Image (tube, one colour):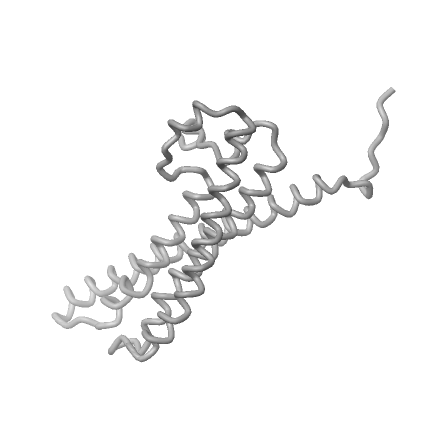
Length: 187
């Protein structure tokens, strides 16, 4: 007879797995919303600029500033989403030579390095935002901070993705299965 599991009895591994899954889902949803919103706003604003120019021979001005502000958000959200799905270019020649334990150590070391690097870049990016705060787009009056903030947010997203990947690596039996890209899911 099979023992019933009470919903209140969750193993620590199950709790950490649930938290990691929730954090990854938040990152994916947030990145998707930012990417889609950036694309839609840029498209609509530039289309409006084209229509107004065609009808009046004058431009509105502000739509030409939208790509400068939103394109960094589009790029960084795409970079974070690619990291979440394991779609970055990877060199895996060494992985074929190592055992599961060796791959686990290698991949854990990589994630620690990636997390440290991107959290450091986010920290340094705060100085860049201070410097760019005086740059203002002339028509919208928006400071360049908003464009550079995309880098910081993206770096934090990549750092958090590295941390959730690290936790996943500690939980699975096959470390090469973590964030493994499955091309059939792209169709």
